[in-house]
Image 1 (cartoon, rainbow, N blue to C red):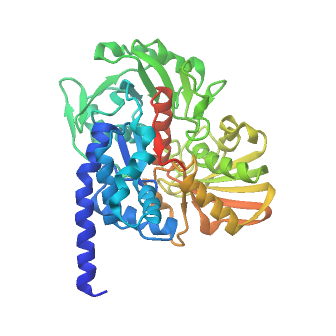
Image 2 (image 1 turned 90 degrees about the vertical axis):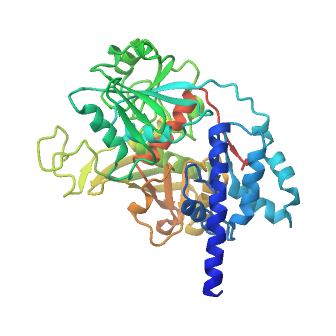
Image 3 (image 1 turned 90 degrees about the horizontal axis):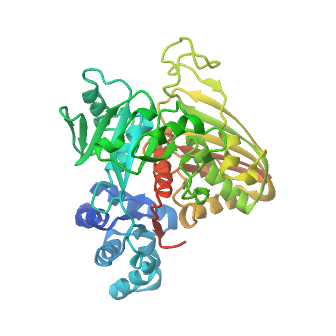
Length: 478
């Protein structure tokens, strides 16, 4: 191909991606339809991100998907009365072009494949959400909720609750939302309403409330009712402590973004969210590591059976550690986080059984905190009931990542060059690194990357939706 033809091809793709953007935006804002390409979200995506998502299709299915081949499906989708669902336009286009030779059947094909979403009754009311605590997870949850702003959005971020309230606090909180050293700048506009103590982000009015205890707030004074309170502080982890939230007028349910103690359900979205009942008022979204490993463990156990195993977590440092050597109540965690690898304990392996009871007593675990700010890895060493090899195990996990009910939790890479910083911003619970897989006979070792901040936050949003009875389909099925 000549240099001019390369440029012409690029120009064509760029213009096609630009033409997609307004359609993608309207589909989400007006109908609650999120469009993806083999799992890669196109909501608020740049033209370059849309182009790159199409290039990745070859890696998944061994063949190209050109933007001119997928664009008619976005157009057809925009004409259908689909509501509240996630549509993989990449899978639809690839499957169609394998069967048909021209575009004449696209609209009829889309109507058949998306029939469930067309008949979906969008009678679910929008629900209020309060973020109690505004640290790493709280701010990322805010970003995720704000990016979905629109008339079709059913999760309405109404308030954040903080301790303190000193002079300048409001502007500093807004600044931390605007800028993030790991995840980059906020995609949009953030304003401060000093008079009414609020932050306005992309048109979302967020009341800032100061309180020292969960039971001190009257949310109804701010027009908030029947709200889900998402506790990101990690201070209260049992029913007695988290139950304090329910004493506040306007709060109806509580979600903890950490492992819970006692009989509180620990939920890994995609694995056991069906355990959440309408009457459950307090639920835990477990830990980032538990979310990363449980979907992969479920997939492996479903096919091969797991006799026992060990999970070693290579985890980025967190705010719980010290920047420089200083006192810490926990062993070793007082030593400087940016300068040391620190062996510590993790309950993630044992916690898997709360979401996947079949693995009760079968896993051990430990953790090493390392000097990176984000993205961690779980090394999962397993003794299986059945035999396999590297190729077969990888092919199975690749299929699970693309075609199964766990496709929104498990991602898969066959890159020989990928490193931790490449996974910042991954929306998956975990990413299987196929190049590192070791498998022979009934022994297998899997390496699973995970963005312990953003990927986990995406999982939390799924649990939030389930707690509030907001049901979203992923189409096409399988």
